[in-house]
Image (cartoon, rainbow, N blue to C red; front, side, top):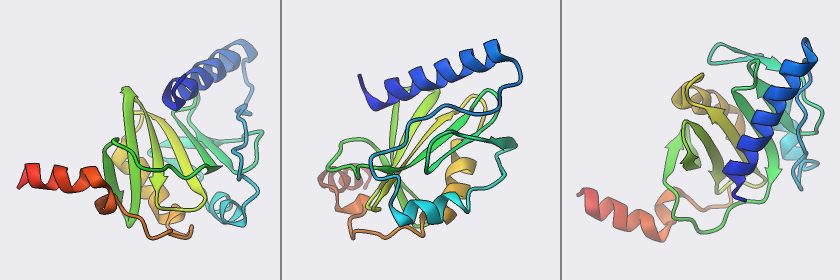
Length: 164
């Protein structure tokens, strides 16, 4: 099962649980393998109270964030940094994001070239991915860069040549 499909399943399960529980405000998430990295603590203490009009909600896992009811944005810090990928990559505010649109309008975006990596799932029918990534990139940019960028990827040169 792909990460995006797994995240969609978590998002749908969370939505169902909230619907059944009424006023439950805690979002059930699993912590990432490197959630205890000090960089993740630096990120999570700076997460905004609102993202693109969606209020922040409590989560039950370290180094996570959620916004909207039902959740329209889920953030997990401490995921394994991605290796080479053919996914599209976009730089926002100095942070490179790999974009998986397999389950559009539900998107999975993962930082590229940051350690630890951050993964964000968002429902593009509810929030603007541009607004969400703009807000989160300011915070995620605090994580150390490992020197890799979108332009370093082998497919990036081919994409740029095709555009030119």
